[in-house]
Every structure is written in C-alpha cells, then in structure tokens.
Image 1 (cartoon, rainbow, N blue to C red):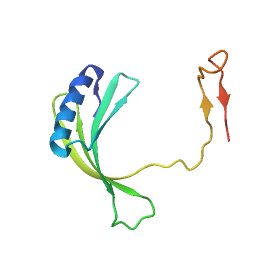
Image 2: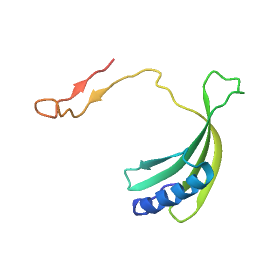
Image 3: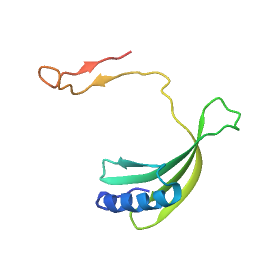
Image 4: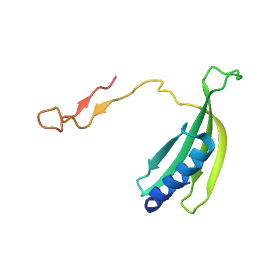
Amino acid sequence: MAAEIEHLDDMIDRLETEARERWGERWRIDVTRWADETVDVVAVHSNGLVTDHDGDEKLHDLERLYTDGDGRIAYEHVHVCHEKVASRLEETVLHDPAADDGLTSKNTSV
C-alpha cells in the first residue's frame, strides 16, 4: 500500500522492529519510491526455494511485512516466481562520468 513519503522513516523503523522480532537478522527491507511522491515499504524474509512444486520455474517461499503509513502492519506468506528477462531489446548508458563530456549516450540495442 503506497503511503506518503514523509512517513518513510517511521515505516522503516516499525517494519525493522517487527522483522527483528520475527526473523532475527535474516530479512531485508525493500523501498519503492513512486513518481507521485508515495512509497511502498516491505520487509522480506526468505525461506528458500519451494522444493515440492511441479513447474519448471523456481518458486521462492517468502514471508513479507508491509505497512500503509497509518500504523497498520500486515503479514503475508507467499510463493513468488521471480521474473526473468527473455530478451534484451535495448540497453542504453544514459550518463558515463568516465566519458569526456559526461553525457555520452551509448545505445547497445540488440
């Protein structure tokens, strides 16, 4: 749930406290900052790969905590299939401080 960016520090503090209580030192916090100045903050704990599934894709067993900036913390236990890049259509270096002008754009389209 996206929340206003001014709540970011408080959201991280609350999720960090809850994550430490649940998982000790085995967790991470992911922050997504959106263009409209809202943020999503999620604490994630990995239980590793799911070993008893029939598909070809690797499934990750994750536990997640998230908050909305209003003080509520929610928990979910999910299996996630990480996205893979099937083919790269374009890759462009937008800024290279090593280039003479620092602004050289290099397109490496394939």
